[in-house]
Amino acid sequence: MKRLRKERGWSQEALAHEAELDRTYISGIERRTKNCTITVVGRIANALDCSMGDLLD
Image (cartoon, one colour):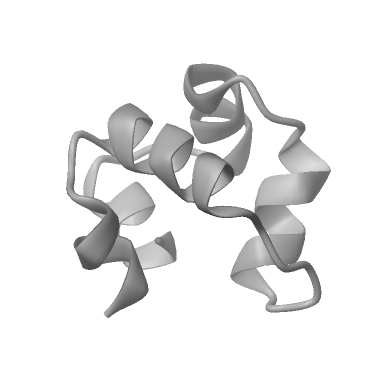
């Protein structure tokens, strides 16, 4: 997720806005201190315009 976010030149805040999530939640996912549901994975994938599989690799 972090790699895809950075490839797009987005901040955590920008991704959080696009996925309608809190920036601290995005940060926790990237630092692997937060687990997310499949619904959240789908929202992040939609925001990044990628498949959920891309995020799980």
